[in-house]
Image (tube, rainbow, N blue to C red; front, side, top):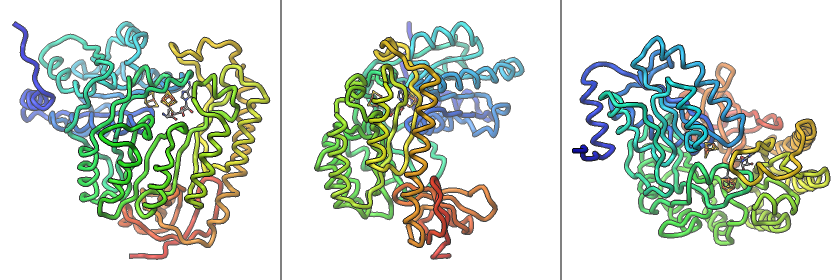
Length: 459
Ligand code: SAH
Ligand code: SF4
Ligand code: F3S
C-alpha cells in the first residue's frame, strides 16, 4: 500500500521530528533574478521550519540548496562550476544533501546531465515544485533514492509557505508566476510555465504584514507584472496596495511594454506618495525588424509613445531598460536604431546583455548568428553611450535633497549605501543604526552610477 501524501507542513514537522535535538544547518546559494531571490526566501523558510539553522559556509551545512538560473549560457556555467566545488564536500560528509532547484533543472537535458555527471546531487526541484522540498528531504532522510522532480506546467500557487526574509526594511512580493509571451530568445516560458496570478486578497494581506513589520520598500514581482490577472488587473492591484496605510514605497518589476495601460500610468501619477517614480521597461532593441523577430509585439514607435505618456504624467520619472546586443541577424543599422532610441529616451540605467542562444527557443536556430567580435564591439559602444547619458542625468541631482532608504553599509567605514525613490544609488555618511530608515540626503557629487551626499536629518 502506498503511503498517503502529506501536506508540506506535515512533511516539515516529520523532518523536524526526525532530527530531534541534533543540530543541522542549511546553506542556500541563489543565482539569477529577483524571482529566485524571493523563491530562495521560501526555500530557506521551509528549511528553518524543518529545524535547519543557517550555516555560515557550505562546509558547515548538512543541506545545500542551489537556486539556479538558465537565462544565459553564462548563468548556467556559473552554476555548474559552483556545483563542481561541492564534490569534495560530499566526499568528506556523505550524509550531506545537495539540492539543485529553480530554472536549470526545469530543462530535461540539464536533469540528464545532473543525473549522470553529478552523482553527488541528491535531488532537483523545478520552479513549479519548490513546495515539494519538505517531502523530498523527508524521503531522502528515510533512506529514499535520488529525486528529480518536475511539477505540472500550471500548478496551483502554494500559499502560506514559511518565508525567511534576509532584511526587514525591504521585501519582494511575487504577484504572478510564469510567462505567456514566448519572446523568441527567452527560456523563461519553458522553465517557469504559463502565467498564474495570486489572488489580490492574499497579496494585500502579505503587504500589510510586511508594512506592520517595518518594511519600507516593497517590490511586486513577476516576469510580466502588468499582465497580472488575479481577481483584478495590475493597475487596480497597484491602487489597492497604494491605498494601504503605512510608511512604504511601492515598486514593481518587470513590465512588458505591450501591457502598459493608461490606467496604470494614471494610478502611478495619482499615488506618487506611495508608488516610486521609476519604471523598468525592457526595450530589448530599437529596430522594428529585430523586435518583430524577437516576438516582442510592439514597435519602436509604440514604445516611444508609452515613454511620452509616462513622462507627461510624471515628469520626474526614472526609466530603466534591458537591451540585448547581437540578436541573430542584427545589422549595424539595427544596432544604430537601438542607440538612437537610447539617446532619445535617456534611461537612468540600462542592463545590457550579449545575446546567448538557449536550447529549445526559436532564436537559437535562426540564421545569421552575429559573431562574437561584432557583438563585443557593439556592447562597448552601447556602454560608452550610456555612460555619458547616466552622468548627464545624474548631474542635476547635485545640491538637491532627496529621500533615501538607507540599505546597507558602504565599502568605506562610516558610509551607508541607499536608494532614492528613483532607484539611484547614494552613498552618505551616517550611523549604522540608520540602516532600514528613510533619510534625507543633500547630494554633493554625481557620478554615472552613484551619487554622494550629506545626511540632512541626523537622528
Ligand atoms: N520578463 C522580463 C525579464 C526577463 S529576463 C522581461 O520580459 O523583460 C531579463 C532580461 O534578460 C531580458 O529582459 C533580456 O534582456 C535578457 N535575456 C533574456 N533572454 C536572453 C538571452 N537568450 N540572451 C541574452 N539576454 C537575454
Ligand atoms: Fe522572457 Fe519575454 Fe517572458 Fe520576459 S516577457 S520572461 S523576455 S519571454
Ligand atoms: Fe534566471 Fe529563471 Fe529568473 S532563468 S532570470 S532565474 S526566471
